[in-house]
Image (tube, rainbow, N blue to C red; front, side, top):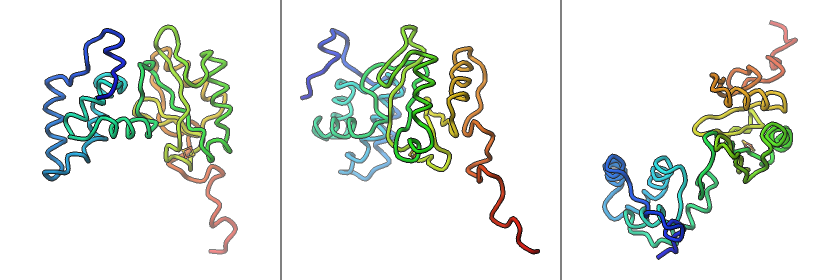
Length: 200
Ligand code: FES
């Protein structure tokens, strides 16, 4: 039994909605009988999509469904940075500060968030619209520095285009996903050079 922070806060324990109970059954059915442990990650993701974060009560619910000891679910949910353990903002910036992003300017992304929102990693705005956390490699190193906001990636970030992105999100305007410098996919930022100068 994991000590539950929801119980401590006097709120109801986590429970999947009827719709998500059906989804959880469908997730469990993807795995062979006796291998339900493997459903831990997608079930934690489902809990997070329902509640916005995975607290200990949600971990216990997932433990109950998978048959894993709650401590095992706690280990998984605290290993992967994509699982959050407290409410976050509507626009939750996960800023990669791993090696490629750091070399390519993630400090400038963090500076833009600090200047524009007054938030450092771990912070959440009073209006609940924005929150910030540092995260490990997002797998978008070729277009570093990168952030994830919800299910969307924003890449090739600079101080200025991060500020512009924040302002658009705040205004509810449409934003461009992926590269913020117009790079197509992960094409060379300097343009096509591999065959430049070669005789035809
Ligand atoms: S190091 Fe940032 S995406 Fe890989």
